[in-house]
Length: 369
Ligand SMILES: *Cc1c(COP(=O)(O)O)cnc(C)c1O
Image (cartoon, rainbow, N blue to C red; front, side, top):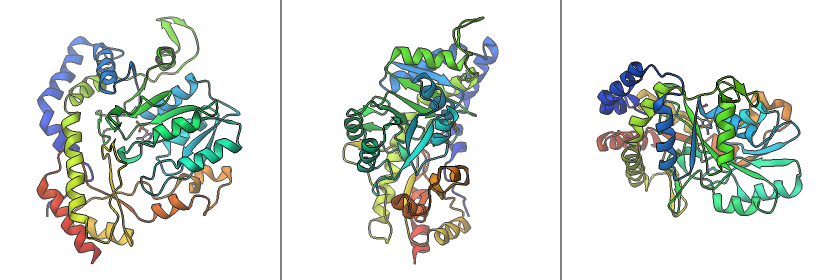
């Protein structure tokens, strides 16, 4: 029985193995491991891919959020709105700069931040300094509505695009709507490095300069430090690998979108909910998330057939032990809580074949009956 992983990194690397090896060898030959030539080139190429002016390579996606928040001078006494169904890195970054995450429920269709509830929060709370929409699963948050709401207050917008490389709203790539956006290149993300890596993108040159400086000990010259910073640089070897993969990301993303539409076709008459997509939004399907009753049973059945699924995420952030001190309770965010019991992420990546999609679909069908 062939095993189907949630995300097939081996197949991806098999396609580009020679190019990856050459890229890594190039770094060994140049010995420029820190801030090397590939870092600069990747930053330029990634900015261009995202249709923005600046990209700053960083050590990982969590640091990208932290350094971006620091550069905006968000800190103690400030609150930042974070949707409650996301990976903990989103809210961890807020706490890491000394600010407080303020959770908000998600909308039932896309499970991204609920705009009406966001408007309600902004209306009643003057300590909110920023809003962090998360483009969850690769589907953009409703950025035009969010910008509209935020423009009525003095509130920054931070796009957590860790799962959304190349996602678009009406042809405009994510990262062009907020003050900045952050990406993770964790190996399993749509654009993945060979270890940890991340980036921040922005159209604001001053912000880009500040983040680059913060990531490199606050330096302006080798031993001249304008401020205290961190060590959170993008490794040259990771940049070299990312440059190779960036040449393939559109092809792989197009296949993800095709896979989603093949699944949608197979599931149209089954008792489950397929992922929604807002019209004119480009969903890049980092994850293909369905909703089913008896989710845990179906997950186990699929696993026994060699089909590896996931749950993103099983416990909404407000119910995590790490946030007990914030005083939230069960029932506070009913949409996210109901979703947490039903969501199931099926295998998807840029190398899943038509036959594999069919096999997953047939096993899902069988598991439902
Ligand atoms: C992966 C991820 C991050 C963190 O990225 P790392 O590179 O692992 O630090 C942040 N936010 C979301 C939504 C993520 O999925």
